Length: 416
Length: 95
Image (cartoon, rainbow over all chains, first blue to last red; front, side):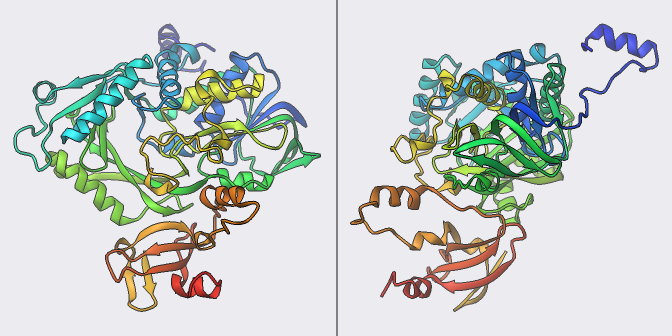
């Protein structure tokens, strides 16, 4: 069933009796051509593009809980492509372009809002760094604009550009950045994949891989063995746990990242603003809540909840840049588990086991990558070759010294 | 989290900075035939378990000692705290 304005009117006049479930709830078959593990944003997007763009058949997505219950439902919903390095920027710009056409493509309202993102500058060194980054973005076909303090004052009059503790000296703006209704991304991809014949199997946890003679032939699950020609893993946060079943150790640690939302307010904050003198970023949801976050907690964790020192640190950053927000009450806070990789960049690659493919290591930037991650992983699964924008996301880059380290922090996952 | 420092008693984890897996104590032999591979694994690959994990914490805002903390990554429960120096000595890594 296609969704449209006409359809909404028709259903409104006929008592909303014609709506169908957005996806089926099928029983798992004995075998599929391609099995995707992980029914989050990336896994569902992979299945969607495999079926729609790469003409693959007999695809299943296995999810241990309910779809969209992991990090695609636990993020701060920001999309942008303001990266510096050649290994990253073309990929994230590809992702932003997919975001721009996504709602028409999968016929679902994901409330994509290109309200712009502004990275504030507080020092000369930071201006140099952001100028360089802006130029790198433009070279890769993205949009970037350096804003002066006067321009910022005109656009964001609530920011203190006169006598703040950390003076605002300008900003790097990407006007095509913005926010998305994150849950709708999972639902839209699920519905789109289902309509192309993908089986989405929930409450089906993968407990092991069946590997013989170096080839993966299927997965053991809580609902029995499921054979597969190819297996793609997209379970960021739990990647190390899952891949340990295939005897792999990964270049990553799992860390918890907290995010916060305030009570609903009238519109006070246009766009996304990041503070440059501490780690704090904020946007306002369409419901009015201020959605914000900051640093990860900093130590290995699989608990989907955080600790208070980071709450204090994030709120200090928020108060430094938006003192007025101190009057707002915090409504909810939550934690999600991140694959923090050794260079802060993701992996989309084959493994040493034939037929077993991996997508993970998204650190805390996986949401914006969802469409391109799905597309590039589908490309890899279907053609056995990496997509042109994702050629650098290899496992062996650590051994070969080809790290993609945006922040230049080295092999210290909690600093990326 | 409270870390029960062997010398100073219970301290707030906010006084510490975190390095990672305590296997970082076991630096490979640079003269080994397999040194390149060993250092790659040492530098980049991690067990990253969900459960008990031995890890290095630095008491930066305290006595600046390194500790090996045995902590559960699912519950944040801490079962054992040792001086990293003592652990390294036991493994023959320090004098």
